[in-house]
Image (cartoon, rainbow over all chains, first blue to last red; front, top):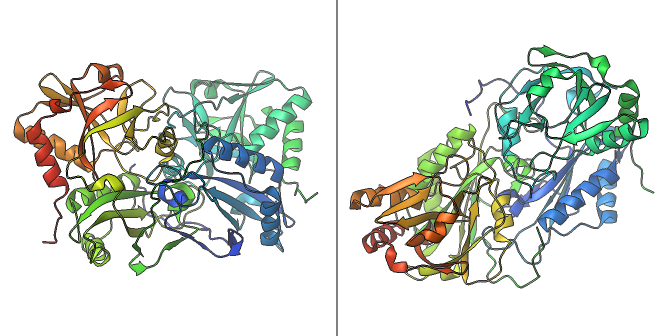
Length: 292
Length: 292
């Protein structure tokens, strides 16, 4: 990648506190496969009023990822107890939950009986996080492509160099995310968001069978659109279609649903995104999920 | 992936000693981008008589990777001084050198002025390491594919889930490595080796423009074949070609050059690999490179 000009980083983030395997500490062993090979998974979870938002959805995706990679699932009660301990006193923030295969094995070969490492860390919210509904965001289109790998598609694993390289392509703080295409010229998602197109009276979102992360808010949009009777299809989307769409929106777990005002030089009508959908999604995204 | 049956791991590896940013310790911070995103690089280096073998070649590849990812290069004198301190008293072993982008940035966005983390750790050699020249090894062919990404191709970065999943496909300790193809049906490399085909009087090795790691021993083979007048071409290799080749060999920095006796059920004549090439490569691979 062409190295970006050196500018100051606005608001670098360091965790407020962290638990590693239940102990208050900020380090992991250098033999951890998460560090050696990116052999693990993570979740980025909005925090409101001392509780994680959409905890069940995040846990479900983590478990799908663990099953795919043959990393043992972690006891959900233990995870939730640790999350609650960590989030005590946190009114608003971001919880990152990381699960690695732990140490062991020989080279790439995974150990037969892995003891996963779990890391829970709570961070301040990003600066643009306070707005109740972020509307009219700007996107760019990244040159970096996503490689196809059906075995890794959909899950939120720790191999994120493609996103890091893509995110290094722009400095403009007014651009919230960059869209990425695969090698076939299909647009897949943003570096940190999922993408939806408003086409005619319905919605389209890229299929994630070969690459991309299946976001928890993406899933929520699929569910709410169905409930609201808004037609929504998942399929391959050619990048050219973006410029013909009536509207666009992007989603993630920390920012919710953001309608797009601009992609590169193309402007979009933000009112093309159904208001009822925005309201229902935004409300659900930031609802703290207290323990039952 | 279908989870493998639980069997005991023969000879799990833990480092004998390690230096993290020059300090004798075995941990890194959880905010290190190497752990968060696999945002970094590594080298696996054979150690003989207290010195790293082919140090210059490893350092050159590390620097190429650092330039590609816009991670600042580390002072080579510092790295070598640390390696020598770590390898004191180690007659034979494996040195893993890891360089991450360190901490900082916001989400995927890399920090503008990264302070890389360097980790040097020395491990015992793998069990089959004692044989002076490993001949007649067996390979399998993995179902897991390599995704295309020209930005990441060739460099030895920390995003290695594809190799982890591929390596989990077999348990047979008699199989030394598994070959991997890309999504176009071209064979690229093994999970931990580069591949060469003996075809007619010459050699062919897969082109690594879209995926795969450009091994230091691969480079050595290219150089020695040229010096010996053995025709060698780099090009796309269809997987079907493997079965028509006169011979095969694989290479890596810890095991050197290994002629292949079997790939799946197909046997190969190990004498098809030019003896002079094997000898020259094996000698160079395990020559400790003392400081000049």
